[in-house]
Image 1 (cartoon, rainbow, N blue to C red):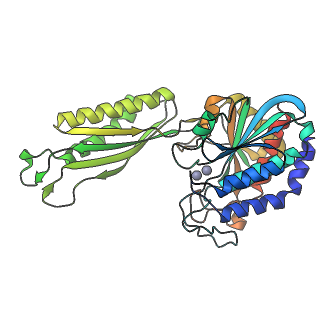
Image 2: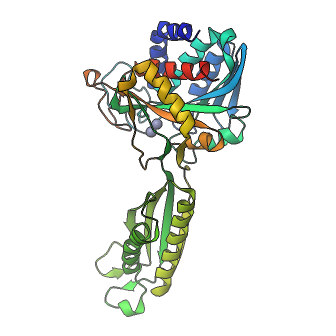
Image 3: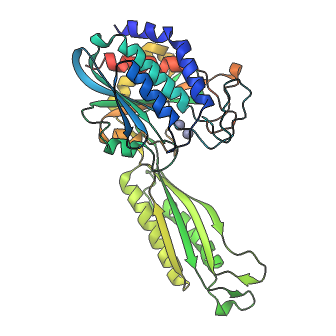
Length: 389
Ligand SMILES: [Zn+2]
Ligand SMILES: [Zn+2]
């Protein structure tokens, strides 16, 4: 029966391409999606799938009840685009100025809709149920996943799987990895409140520029001296702004940056150390300081058993030599919230192909991917549903 679903998927490939290109021409920004979720809901409805809209915001969740007993498997695709001008020279180029599907979420959506159609055609033979999670707003914190989970998109679900097309791997390859694979991503905004005045009278001022300079250097002490060297952690100051004249000591200095971690306790430690150093540095030099620490996505932890499951399914579909290990990195992905709640795994499907100019990195104005990757994603999803015992 799985083979039949595979055949069906192959048969509707052209339709998936059309859906992908339609989405590509009509991209919508995170938290502002309207047309895309409406299209998804309509498509799933026509397949006879039970649909819930406005899940945790603009999310859409479909439920397909299989004819045989088994687990409930959730499959997730995100559907938001980015504030980037599309610079590709193709006939499916974005029609919305300054907005573009530059991460492949159009590909994810079309692949999952194709999967839903192929699975619907063999519905009576499906063991258990399938939940289709079409998620809004992956690109912008706090992301759509956390609200969709709170709104019950995982209720009754046993395992969850998601895929990201990855242009750094050629089409035909699949990349997997277990454990922590992407980082928790937090942001900080620091204001140093000094006392401005004449540059020639520093003794009557509290110079926030000098204090800020100490602080930028001292913050690097956290990762190198305070965090267990076997725990990945990163702190980058991305902005340091103050003053704009040769002969003036400014009143305030502003510092902002990002903190990335894997481990939950290390994440808390980074925040505490940052606040302590900021406070003590300001105190030492007689300034006051405001620290705003904003939490972004949690880190993405791929469950070992479920990752092994995906690895084996992928090996059957693309061949053992085409399944590779994806190194962990410090990027963020809000699929993290699903696998924080229940077992599951997130994997990467190669979409690179120099022959069609699919060579530019994600979030690049010329980003494109090989659409054939949708068939591989779809087949792994279908296999994950059929072999769920
Ligand atoms: Zn992205
Ligand atoms: Zn993405």
